[in-house]
Length: 98
Image 1 (tube, rainbow, N blue to C red):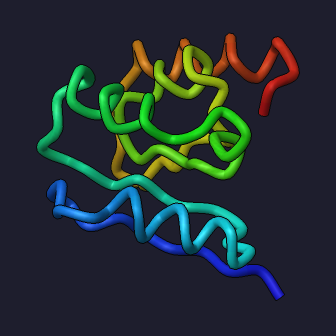
Image 2: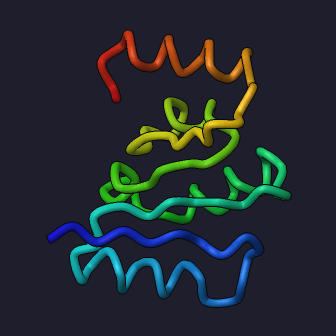
């Protein structure tokens, strides 16, 4: 069985500790959904996740961080219209990381 979790939209105290416990318990993927976060704030959070676990992190925005931080992937909504970010995803796919 695969187990997925979706982050809270804000940055609650203890989020990283809870995430670490979920990953240790076998979480398949953690979808990071922080729609109001800047790319810098999101990168700050992701830097605190151990490199060995980043392959199980999926982003819902700021897709450029997927390749920069060697994350597991990205999640587009059907209504997403981010042509520049979709271009970077295309490059990411071509390099064989997705």
